[in-house]
Image: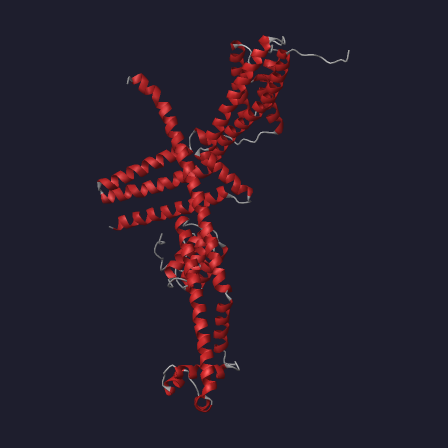
Length: 255
Length: 244
């Protein structure tokens, strides 16, 4: 006897599929973490941008609208009235956007430990690893909780999710046809999910706010302070608009 | 649509409008950033041309020659004047008029006439050399002016993209003030200078302070504290709004 274990073709395939599944699960956890980071970073950046720059655009739009309204009052033509309405609508929009819920988002800078924990949760609790529909429903609920906890940067809530799922039975590991079929289904689901994640990342990355964030990050990496520069430029424009408004108002009073 | 449905839709519509407004603000910020980047690229190109215009050895030689000929102590001045006289006469000018236009002394005129009468070949070759030098100087000057014109257009292109760029405003103020690549216009120069100073450009603040303290023209901005010297300047002659 030379100690070699002979596997049946089915067991051999199962072993290979298990290896493939383990690899895919690692990739999935990484990509889920990347997506969660991207989403949270974007929300935090959006909030910061609206608080620093959005409010200035809103102020500039308000002066522009005031000027247009004054012109409309003096001019009285339908065209001037319409221009004033458009300017006012834009000013209101800018104000609502820069003072709304999105502007209240807090900064996002997760610690490495939190990232590790979230990755662990993805690995253990991901719905695409579910054995049954009941299991899947539970995993989906827990994954949603984990996503929210990660966004809040709450490691305790993430640990709680892990604990809650810890003692759940995994899929049957009988080494037979049922397990092979289950592993194949998991591989298929994870592959689909990976495709969906990539599509979502691509969609998020092509959004205006993501492009702006990328631009600002690249400028910051070069040692510039693009947000400060932008704010400076807009403040000068506000100053100019305010002066223009006051000059118009003074001219109107003279008449 | 029932009233209940309409009420249910309002928060959703509000959220969608807010999302689109945020998107619009983001797009606006990105566009401003891109414009500022492109403006800086124009500034860089303009500065390259500016440097090329002033670092040109030909132009520097012209400046040297002008400085040289202006110097009363220059020991070659007399010789250069005689050469200039010979060139003018060779080009058809009346000898007396040429001597008069060059403020030549009678002694110098006599020397020039002697050179022309007794050594005509030498005089002719000297005239040719002077003419050649003048042509080269003209070409150097033209090249210098063309570079400055192109530099000015670069700065203007940058200004159109980012009218509040402090560096561009500062250099445009200099161009308008001195008349480099564009006709001199002190009013426009002052507007650019004020705009540059308003964003804290140290050179512009100094130049503006100098203008105010020397009571040249213009008036301090409403908040005159940002340059101590400007605070003392009178508030008269407030210039007109910037040409944008």
